[in-house]
Image 1 (cartoon, rainbow, N blue to C red):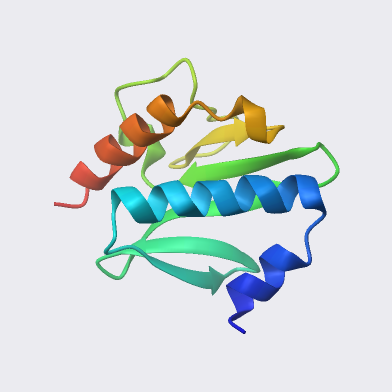
Image 2 (image 1 turned 120 degrees about the vertical axis):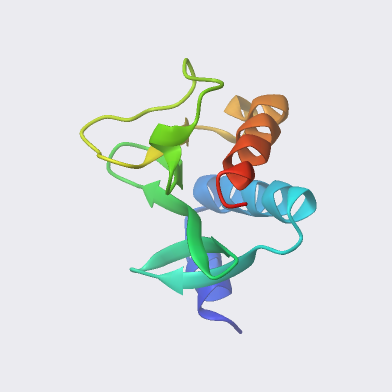
Amino acid sequence: MKLTDEYIYRQPEKYQAILLHLISVFEQQIPELVLLFKWGIPYFYYNKRPFCYLAPNHKKGFVDAGFARGFELRGNQECLIGEKRNTVKSLRYYNLEDIDNAVLIDVISEAVTLYK
């Protein structure tokens, strides 16, 4: 079993469901993405460059989908969280039902254009 799979299946059910859904959407949208285990979390790479990490925060109760070049994104700003980060912006999900696939797909589609 890959490290990413082990990590995901060790998560509480709430986070596991969110992570599995996010991974499914990312892989459907960009089949060329490679999911690696970097810095202790699942991290998608596109053309060998960091694209988006998936980080559960058990203390605060959410999963962050953090886009490595998030501050370059123009669309969906009302949904993206920057906080005190210089380059990353993320979509934050507290429950599986919080995921708006249309927004997620739109952000993924825009983010991949930053790598071409």
